[in-house]
Image (tube, rainbow, N blue to C red; front, side):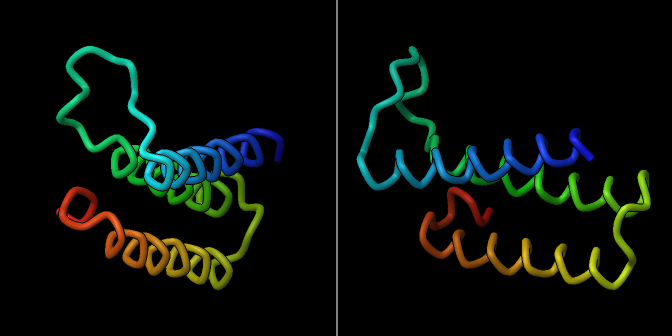
Length: 93
């Protein structure tokens, strides 16, 4: 339970951090990252982690049933599609 909660928290923190960076225009002080669209990268990583968390909760640990897992995976996918409309091709493609 704790591993899944930590993974879900990490996914949400990455998505929240991406939104913060996108809205504030914060520049990441990493050499060579000037051309990278960091908010889209963080959002994609957060969505990936959330997908993996739901998969692990159902497929590995058996904490949730198939109906709830399917619903959560669908909700994550719809949210990722909605966010990709904001980020554009950097996240969608």
